[in-house]
Length: 255
Image (cartoon, rainbow, N blue to C red):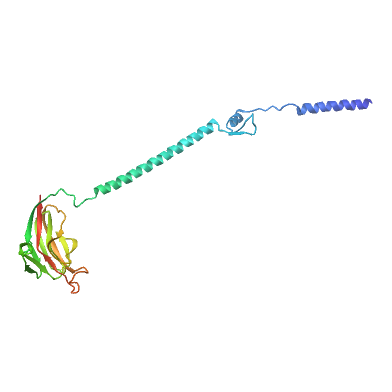
């Protein structure tokens, strides 16, 4: 009996000792450092005490500040890009506007057209002479009261030409539109300007065949050359030739 009691007492003492060593039944003491406190304050997930299942997503002040700074930088970068794009568009528009405005217009001049002078086809010189016709080639003339001054000159020969020198700013060529007339080349001051077709479906006299742009004031010479070419309607096409004719020219002095 004494032995049983001794064993029981020994067991009680051992059990008490074990509970004392393990601390069972006591809440463990948790020590929180400043660093851990900082980490907790920056946590982005908070569980509501009233409703543990509800989750509220939040940010620490530092994180919010960093995001705010990032948004600000993004906004500034976008603003700079928009500003740059706006400047580029403005520059391109200005460049285009400047290019267009700086394009010269040959018809926009300060030169005024003054007095007109008619030069008849019978006013002829054997070289370049002011207000005179100079004919090169085997030209013929026709007397007809339906022409200015009662006459005109004409020729079939290819490369034949006439020239007129004048002091002024503009000129007109007056002649026929005719079924057998073809294409002539026009030169002003020895510079090729264009081809002019003198063909007409009938016979129209004293018509303006060509009128020049306004030229710079001074002495000019224009030259008309029979190219020998014709359009498909020309009645002289089958013969492989065409007629060049002239009645008179009108020259205009500077105003």
